[in-house]
Amino acid sequence: MLYTSSENNLILVVDDTLTNLEIISVALIESGFTVITAINGEEAIQKIKSQLPDLILLDVMMPRMDGFETCKNLKNNPLTQDIPVIFMTGITDTDSKVNALNLGAVDYITKPFQKEEVLARIKTHLQLRNLTKNLEDIVAERTSKLDNALRELQEFQVQLVKQEKMSVLGQLVTGIAHEINNPVSCIYGNLGHALTYFQNMINLIELYQYNYPEPTAEIEDTITAMDWEYVRSDLPNLIFAMKEGIQRIRDISNGLRIFSRADTENKVDCNIHEGIDSTLLILKHRLKGSDNSFPIEIIKEYGDLPLIECFPGQLNQAFMNILSNAIDALEESNAKYTLEHSKQIFIHTSLSEDKNNVLITIKDNGTGMTDEIQQRIFEYLFTTKPVGKGTGLGLAIAHQIIVQKHQGTLEVNSARGVGSEFKITIPTF
Image 1 (cartoon, rainbow, N blue to C red):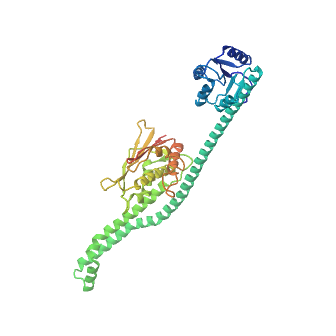
Image 2 (cartoon, rainbow, N blue to C red):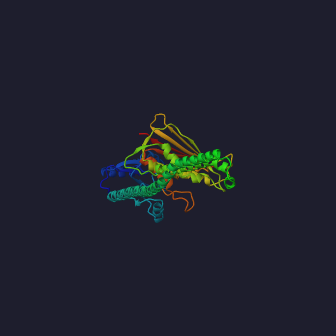
Image 3 (cartoon, rainbow, N blue to C red):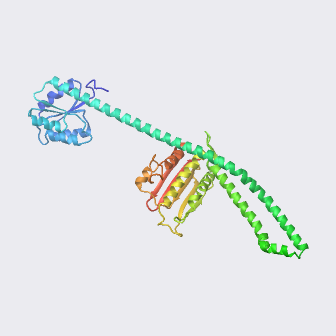
């Protein structure tokens, strides 16, 4: 808003000559300004502490603290540095004027002065100050809007990435699971019949052995070559092992379908433990360890949880990102681990005392994080991993899913050399 009147504008007049104070004050009051006065720089600074003026008229030659020193103090104080200062003095030399302007004064009026000139200059500088303040407000408002727009754009980009990844993953896994289920179901169903058939044949062979105890030399050689006694005892074990392997494949297929289940527009009832277990199933290859790395032990402490309404696919994605981050932390160094002191991830679930929230804790005994990293861990595109190893989206997506999509909370506690703990709360209603 442009300056249009002198109403509500407070002017501080500083002059050690009472006559000058009275003349200037009367002129300003008659023009509609509010006026406060001081007879030296120290008094002026004290009064400013309790009431900030819009403009200051300042004499140069004053006892105890002259105008130049007063102006310097004002400009060094962040609270008063933007207040316009106009010097009014009888000193007319150029050096004094230059010194005044270098100290931050906006104008320099020499005595004796004309009332109309002083009022005109005051109004001009008040208007300039208002224009500056308005411009700063506009810039701050525009900057805030740009920051909000950037944040919304980042969140939208993350949402697109997440939706696209989950869509592609869901379609891929559903297709694979469907293709696996058909032959696996066929094998699983026929293994029982195969075992029955083999058992019947074994019974038949044993019946022949009972009724014809003296086999020919050729049959005897064949029995010896095939190690018939071992085959007869091991064949049922072989069938049962094949059946367990097929059951394992069926469990993996079912876990993949649970993990990547497509979300609808509305929340559905979900078993949190099934989601965590299906996520661990997918990450199992990273938990086994290798020649150069110790395996990672998963310690689960599951509480008695009810089904909760959520978006299961998205929630599983959040679990995946947090658990992957824990595995990355554990893989950073093998130096601190031994067979006795193994790499571990602790997963604890429980219901809050008021039963309004599910509490999930995922904790590792990895390398931990500094305070600086903890403060930025959920920022978009922030990563401490080398180029090509991380996108900086994993934990940001997890935070968005838990906090924005499920109105829950996601917090991290960590310390260098100790490990990191992610605490999740999800409402049960």
